[in-house]
Image (cartoon, rainbow, N blue to C red; front, side):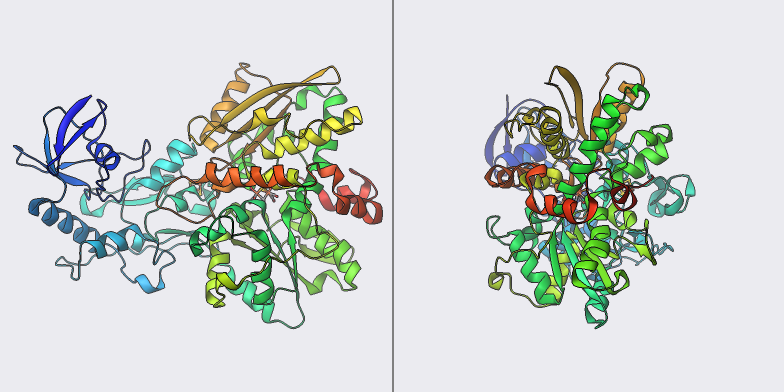
Length: 573
Ligand code: HC1
Ligand code: SF4
């Protein structure tokens, strides 16, 4: 332990604790912009400066450790002057048009500038405005970039891709796409982690809300929406709702009030995915095709983009089952269109997802009879959903819990846990067990694949399960850096698996790149617990026991892996 003073308060901390962390533990917040624990501790912004008695120069608190006998001031006149000047310098290179910024009201720079009462910028304004492909799902606005390096570090250290790099030096330092490529030619997985870790509005998703409003206003279109599992675990955060109040039923109500005609829960099509994927796994596992082991899940489009660019030889090992988003779109434009007696062309499908890569996934085509189009017409993120609720002037307090529409109404607990790392695997094993043994396991026996907590560097869960005398070797991994490590270990022959689940975002979809942003605070684990709670309270916890799934097979698909199922529910990657 070391003992020292911060702001005239005697403090004790473990050795090697940074000044910032020791202050935080004692209720003394030190402002920061670039710092991200364990990922970005480079003091690029110099907002966290503090004064050390006996030293002429101010020091940064994020990367200097507290030492015995230090006397530190976090808010002395010298500190305040320097901190203000540092923020003013950052503002002199920042497009300060806050009212039209996607992050207005949730911007760390706006907050610190306000906190420090900065009302003028006494420096020459120099904004770096570069062109960007506005059609790409990930949008970068160089004029807002504060060169904090968080995007560079997250993409490199956590996602193992290194799409961003530093260009230039001194006041001309900026961030660009590595290799001076265009973003569409880089290997961006569209995981969106650089967006959720950006402290300002330099990175965001492409806004697709106007497309949805236009479809709603179009009298000829029947707008049919689906809501992903992980959205319910996070949407209330930005609306300051209590977690227990922010139910999926209220999302359904908000969509209906905006003018959406039909609303559905993606948990239904997650169950459909399980029926197809568990069937596919058992067939691949039992036909002795050793070369195609392990089979990889394919419902996460960030992972699919990653494997295609980084490990193309593994693409054939992806499950051919479409993701729940795409399956639901296909079902809405065929089975559902027939049910309500309209043509697929009249249906406009919208999905509400915690994800940016889903905007890329929707570009895949769907052909059905005369129809040539897409499973999904528009994808909005959880953040865009909240913006639509706000722009429709809907007061969250007035929302009611309403059910999703019929006939694809119910989703099982297994479908709900798709939104958290390990959940797809658990759901698939529950149904595979039933297929192999003819009976249900206890719903929680595959719990070992659940993540124990959020840690960007330990996102792999491994387990062996013996069913009917056959042992299955399973892994579930989240975060693309962790995924790369796992694939390398597999290629070196250090580990062998039969079935592997991969989610691009740390923690799974609950930590998705389209979820509400809390300035680098990781909420994936907390949100995941909410989905596990919904699963354990669910009446139906097995995809194969979902009665609406039984009906759709009976009326339309016949059985898993049938010809029609292959046409509509499977894809080539
Ligand atoms: Fe996901 Fe999925 S779980 S990928 O995270 O398989 O986005 O929630 O909708 O499609 O169900 C996301 C979540 C989501 C799909 C499902
Ligand atoms: Fe990297 Fe993901 Fe951002 Fe793409 S979206 S640049 S892969 S962090």
